[in-house]
Length: 333
Image (tube, rainbow, N blue to C red):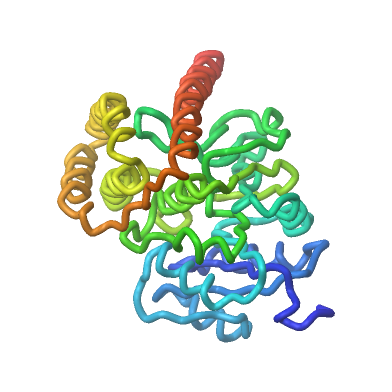
């Protein structure tokens, strides 16, 4: 590829757990990149579907683990193994556009204060619809995918976001040494929002790059949008997220909204048959949150806390707007 491994700009880290059905197409898209200034590293999380044998047969650089370390543990191992200035985290159930790597590098190199860049993720089987235009967090204590389910034509402008979606995002590797890596207590779900939150509190930006296009299957590892495992872990991790990243005054200020949001979510999951799982996750989070490492809130952090509070408010209005537009769209069909 022209450059030695140590001279590459980016390492593409692909966590894999029983994702054999997606790997070939994922790698075929990477082979077609107009910018080949990257190395690939797969983190194999104890798959039992033939993934390990396929990776060995193809001689793809891989870290093999005998057990599932979760998304957080797996990508942390990959990030620490890499030596490039940047790392791209890429889900196995994705197919990237030929200019993806080039556009991601171009976006993150615009400023040393950019920690992460989120790509324009569209639905693989319905590419006219958005999957994710960056992740947001609101005063109800809800994390959500910006633009999900809406027309992909409406998300063609770069902007600041709360956090990059780690399903197809680029990160400045050295910043992890400053703010910490993905929290292994999360295992999976909301771990990308948590690390993006910590980056914001350290004064870094997370941005959205609409020219880096990714086609995403969605839930390729977990198998479904909602299931018992996912609902429980997301509820637990939401407790961790607030406890770790909000100083006590801010947590008390936002507590009414978070309680309202929790009640609404509980009602939603009860209708889907996952109410008990949601409560189990909440109780587990409350019981174990003391084991989390909280952000240190010195005087210099308060201006970033205030900026985050404004972002949470704006994200609340954005959620209401996008939700209402989706509902109107359904009524018109």
